[in-house]
Image (cartoon, rainbow, N blue to C red):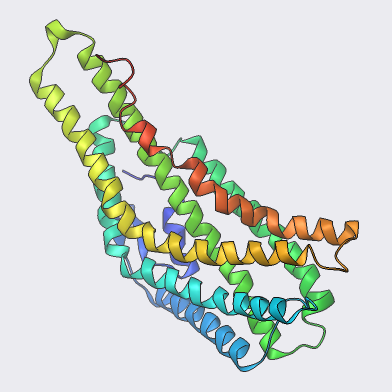
Length: 299
C-alpha cells in the first residue's frame, strides 16, 4: 500500500533513489541517470559553496562586530556542511527507509487502514510549498538588492547553496513529520481495535488478541528501530544549522542600526519559517501518548 503521495518526491531533490512502483505496488530503490545526476549536482553545489566561502571571507550581513562577523561566516560554512551530512546520512540509510515503508504497508493492510487521506501530512506538505515560495520571494529581493550587487562567484554559489538547503532541509522535516503522523494513525487504529476486543470479555478470541498485540509491538519496533535509523541523524544535522541561524538573526536584531520597523519586519520574515520548522517536529511527535491510548480506560 502507498503510505503518502509525496514520499518519492525526495528523488527529485537528490536525496535518495526511493520510488513507488505502480506495477509491483511497493516502494523500491530505482536509481536512474537522472536521480544519480541530481544527487551529484546537489553535492557539487554544496561543496563549491563551502570551498568558495572558505577561500573568501563571505558574510550574509555586516554586523559591525568582529565576533558577529566570525559567527556569521561560521553559519555560512555550516549551511553546506550540515546539509551534506544530512543528505549523506539519508542516502546511506535509504535501504532502511524502504524496509520501514514496506513493513508499515504490511501493518496498514492488516489493520485495513489507509493513510493517503490523512489531513496532517497534506497540511505539512502544503506548508513546505508555501515556505519555499515565501523564501523564493525573500531571496529574490535580498539577492538582487544586496547580495548579488557585485556579482561575485562566491556570493552566487553561497546564495544558491542557501536556497537549495531550504528546499532539501524543509522537505526532510516534512518527511519526518508526515511519517510521525502515519505512525500515530496506525497506533490509534490498533488501540481502537484492542478496546473493541477487550470490550466483550465473553466473546474474546485469544488469537485475535495476540495478533492485535503483535501489531502493536511491530509498530513500536519500527518507530524505535528503522524510523530512528533513517531520520535520527538527519534531524541532528538539520537542527544544528537551524539553531545557529536563529541565534544569528536574534543577535543581529539587537545591534545598532536594526531598530527600524522595516528592519524588524524583515527579520521577522526571515526567522519565522525557521522557528516553525524548529518547533514542528517537536509539536507533531506525540507517539508517546499514542502508545497506550487505552491505558486510562482499561483496568
